[in-house]
Image 1 (cartoon, rainbow, N blue to C red):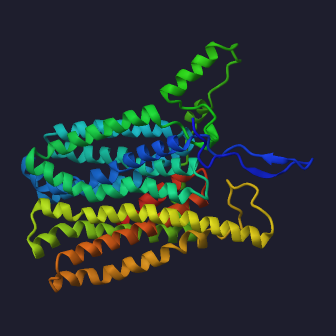
Image 2: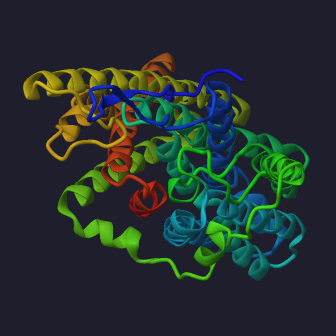
Image 3: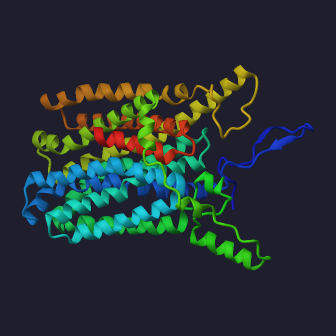
Length: 444
């Protein structure tokens, strides 16, 4: 079975008789299970930004096939971004009440239905409506995935896990235009949505089979039973058939499904000054990176005469920078947290008894943000110089290298900010990430 992740039982103090007090593991899942969950939710989280960016190279083809105007086709991009920003506020609140699995499965099913409709639509009105529906389904995946990371990771290792989780969604804007250009230029723009449907179907099956419920108010450290996977359901019924029947109990989720979540919670967080500043900071970083992505195609074509495929290949360094930034800085943030805990315990001459909870006087802001400062400064210095490279016709390798450095710095900064938000609102990871998603989509 392997040992639980972070999750070995810890000595958390002493009992009244002086014997060690052993607490339960924070999460009962093995390392293998945790990384399987992280991989699936990371790739699922990629679907929202991928769906937004894979669409760009096909806009001219769609305009011709549906006999509409460029302005009307561009409106489908705008409404997608609007729903991408607003929808997580709805689904994130549900995920923090009903559980992660029901929201994952419902939204992915909505996404699959929208992809089928988009591949078959023959009218502009259908295209506009279905793009809104697609954003409504896909955009929640990022917020719910962040909630899962907060559920299964101790604060001391949360940044590293969050760095892994971010890899998928950061790849979406990079590989989207490359895939969209290749597909639209060869087999037609409708195949973009058939390909997205195939990917989403695979993700839906993996989520259904392999990702258990993690909401701690429902299942605790994973030992509880709610919203089960097929394997959990089978083991439950197999064990109950071989043991005396227990008195019937109402499933913990049944009453929750009858409750109405607070859909305004993600917006209420914006009223807190420190949260608002952090979210705007992360949103501005996202919009800056988005400016790089959107402008790259025309700049590389106008100044270097690159073909569509060559331009697509130029997006690869940004993707590599995003992956390295999220992974490396995630590790550094874990190291920074461990050092901060050590200093805190030395100053207070006592150990933190419950390592699942961050003390109110713990320097969490300094711990999460001190490492990302240099990354932010490097990325912004690159941004100041980047535009001038095209005016002076610098060799192609230089702007490509600058894109890599920028992407590393931006993603590193966003990793620290988003981890901080999950730290500040334990158990509300989906809702607070919905707030972040709203801010960054509006600014983007």
